[in-house]
Image 1 (tube, rainbow, N blue to C red):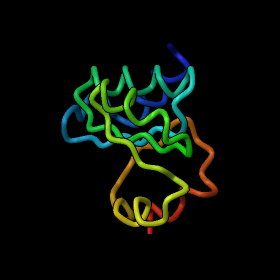
Image 2 (cartoon, rainbow, N blue to C red):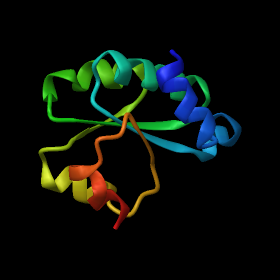
Image 3 (cartoon, rainbow, N blue to C red):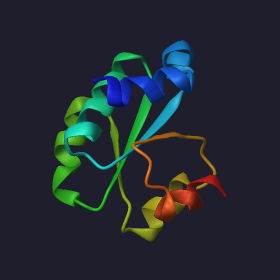
Length: 97
């Protein structure tokens, strides 16, 4: 839990609550935990994944799914501010443009 909790706390996700939008890259073990923690802090959560098969599980938790291999879906969130975790930012930098 601390691997995902620490960055959320550091970037103010807990303090900002519903005013914070958190992006989670990948929905494996750490990603799943990050989603649960960020949602429990009241954040709006987007999950970036190439695994479309995980969409239902992501949405069941209450997060929003973005297929990072789909240029249209990525373009739809371009310009939004995210606290990204866990960070492998290469293909996600366009979100910040």
